[in-house]
Image 1 (cartoon, rainbow, N blue to C red):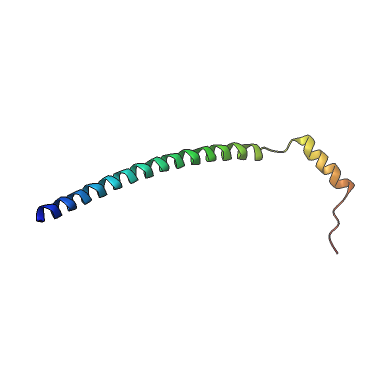
Image 2 (image 1 turned 180 degrees about the vertical axis):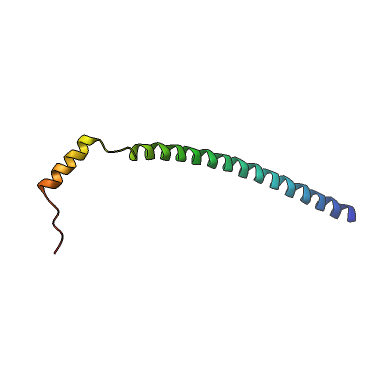
Length: 77
């Protein structure tokens, strides 16, 4: 009787360890995928920030200045 209980406990321990190993493999795989996606987002964000932070061309600035001078700002009453 004791041998059967010991065998069942051993099988439970082995199955628990296997389950833990499989879970850790899956978790590591998901973490690597998450890291790759985050790197892609950061690279995309850096590219868009470079475009957004470029100085405004002189011609466009003059166009806005002309529009403003034609319709000066009137504060709300």
